Length: 318
Ligand SMILES: Nc1nc2c(c(=O)[nH]1)N[C@H]1C(S)=C(S)[C@@H](COP(=O)(O)O)O[C@H]1N2
Ligand SMILES: [Mo]
Figure 1 (tube, rainbow, N blue to C red):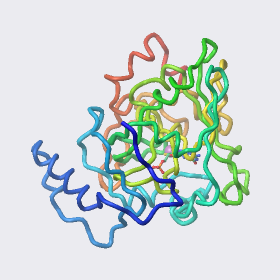
Figure 2 (figure 1 turned 30 degrees about the horizontal axis):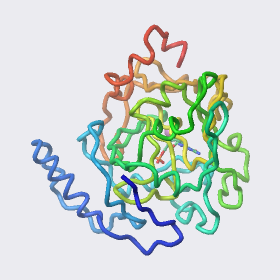
Figure 3 (figure 1 turned 90 degrees about the vertical axis):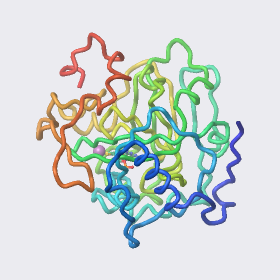
Figure 4 (figure 1 turned 135 degrees about the vertical axis):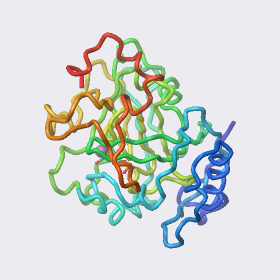
């Protein structure tokens, strides 16, 4: 299926699927499953609603959770995106017009592969079948959300580049542009932000490239125009606003490994039994809820991913 997606700068304001329709559909699905009455409550009018382009041709995924969605308001105002500042509210304040529509966004795919290339992000997206994936997101800081992403498996893009036998890891890079990203004017982290996955993790069907949430194009603060989502790992692995995807032979040193080698490992799988040196990882606060809940091994995705780590000591490879 060919996805017709107009370039961002040609877009009129939002089209179809509005927020209420989206929520009503979710509500229907949830009540059909006999889920909570809380979902049938009307959404407060003051809540933020999606504004960007709507996707009208996404399919639902068997990987989606039917847990209660975190509100659009919370997903887009409580963020970690240090390129725009370190306060949770900074990205919503400084990234709403990001990226600049006059600066075409390109994604370089290179390294150990037979078909490297530089793609306009809209061309890259245009080749993919879009899905809605409702995933839990667990931040290493001890909070979590349930987010309805729009995107496609990373594997589709990787396979097209034809990685060679030296490709053991995949490295991702965020844009470096202090003009657009005021947080990069200070050395809070080593810029640009880098993340990486082992090849089999990158190829796993749960690993998503996301281009939207709540059925609309990705807000700047959540990593527009394209970001990674790896739901069984701590949130910082899900790198935002990607400009480069590179196949490499050696395990890359990622930004957070550099920032705190004893605190942030390469794997960073969600694991309630391995505490952060400065706090416990046994529990988490679901944003919008009052009481803490238990954190699940692999963030509840163990059935899908546990075998990737067979025979590995997850205390050592944290
Ligand atoms: N480039 C970049 N990607 C990033 C971050 C960041 O600061 N810069 N923060 C990470 C962290 S710590 C988390 S928890 C998630 C948060 O994603 P969200 O704001 O969409 O919920 O993004 C991750 N991706
Ligand atoms: Mo995080």
